[in-house]
Amino acid sequence: MNIAVLGTGLYPFGVYPETTLEDMCVKVLREALAEANIHVNQVEAGYFSNVLAARLEGRQTLGQQMFDLVGINGIPIVNVENACASGSTALHEAAMAIETGRYEVAVVLGVEKLSGNGLGMIPPDGRELEARLGFNTPSQFALRASRYLHQYGGNASALAKVTVKNYRHASLNPHAMFKKNVTEAEVLASPMIADPLTRLQCCALPDGAACVILASRAFANRSKLQHPPVHLAATVLMSGEYKNPPSLAFWESDQRASGQAYRTASIGPSDIDLVEAHDAFTISEVMHYEGLGFCQPGEGLELLQRGETALGGRIPFNPSGGLLGRGHALGATGIAQTIEVVHQLQQRAAERQISGARVGMTHCMGADKEGDARATVVQIYRV
Image (tube, rainbow, N blue to C red; front, side, top):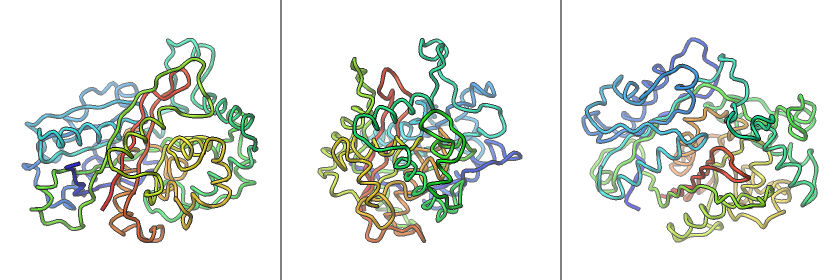
């Protein structure tokens, strides 16, 4: 593909009672523009990702307001909402616009402010039968966990290892929400949310923002950059096929999206050096090992227990700490995943640096429908 990442900006995910959406957006926009050595007049399009500001605060067309704070206006601005995959979807749309020659430079910005609003868990769509019967997000993933453990064996203790691993990774990440290590016993002793998932097996919903600047390779080649550009080799956006009966122990959309991404990039799973994946719950990461092709169905827990998905392992998953350790600021998450991969490939990830990393993958999915994801985005980056 004809696309490079030139600049990044990331507001550490956390709880900021006195910080506004505007504060976070201005900071990450300025960081990304400075890193890319881009003037606002060179930006040809903006893509803005947010999930809940319209619902919680009644704010509409927020992207135009946020970009204008740094003087980006008078250009096409697209507001994107695709549940948890909103940031990845915004990035996908910006990339495809550059790939088809519509623009040379586009900015992708995502932000969310979720702390202190009494939201609790992400509310389901109350018009659906399952939601009216009390089937919320944690219970959806708990059902998957129960089915997976029944079908392939294992127990809740094995799942807790995902949290232990990702909190350890997050402790090395200054932008992560949680910076302390936890033990398997602490994970299992935390309050039960939806059996078998305890609180520490569910991601938190913090405040945060993220921004990346994309450009054509030609533009990147004539730019003076702080860091070498990272190239986007594939971007795929899929929705589920919603087959009946569904397979609750395997995400079919993971397999289709990653398969197309591998073909586009002309590589396979063995060529990937790291993955930032949607670990909203511990069972999610284990199932993504399998859906993305890093092991066969039913082998995910073995891959985890052998340490292959930890830093220092064969295929590190979520070196940033993932959604469990870094936090899940919805509209900013997919963009933050890209930033982690870009920094790893530029050899600037400090204590969590993966030696010799040259190819990285991001994966984010949004919302559930009839046993599959409503939106799944897989992207592959390389140097």
